[in-house]
Picture 1: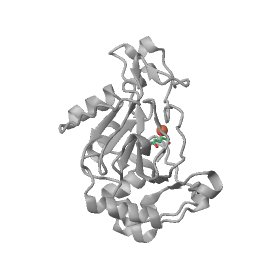
Picture 2 (picture 1 turned 45 degrees about the vertical axis):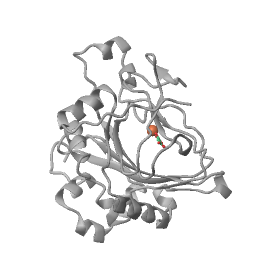
Picture 3 (picture 1 turned 90 degrees about the vertical axis):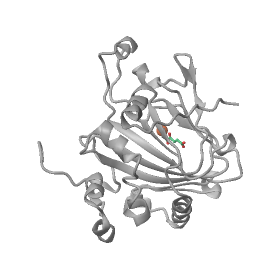
Length: 265
Ligand SMILES: O=C(O)CCC(=O)C(=O)O
Ligand SMILES: [Fe+2]
């Protein structure tokens, strides 16, 4: 049995910034209403994977377990478009990445019984550094990429919680099949449907095995500094849906990639 992570929530933005810099993540309880959770889950059930978007369509028959991941969901349904800037979370994304930040992807992901443990990993390490250099308080590695996880289920150990090793981004490196860093073990995010977590790309974490008989529904929104490239497959052939674009607010348009001109335009 893995320990549950102690999830502190902070109402002040500067404390949230401090938490993601210190622990690698910030926790937001009760962000989504029960109605929004039902609506998002229904939409995830209905959306069909598109192979050209690199969506995943794993089924118990073809890959041994349900593994359906719909990419660029902001471009598939207005419900997801409105998940670009969910109040309470977007303020932290803008505080850490800048007021001109954007998303680099948004994925709705359903994982069924039989999903195995992932390896502990960092989603992206901007650059390696010696541990004693990162430990120097004068050194602060910027948070270039972060991911918001919106949990659409009450999470329990058998459903496959996300695990984190708090503070592990201060290792200055990627993990090498380690389940702890600096004496701190990987711990489970046991939370409620509607809770959210924003974590930096260099903190060590993983998704764990689904040993339940239930499908886990997760929405991921990947934010980044404006200089980090967006990655909307099929890249050269990606097209914004004009109907959805017409509904987007100026902030949502910026998050999808509309920026003022600057260096390199
Ligand atoms: O499934 C999860 O909870 C985390 C997934 C993850 O970390 C990843 O796919 O990179
Ligand atoms: Fe990950």
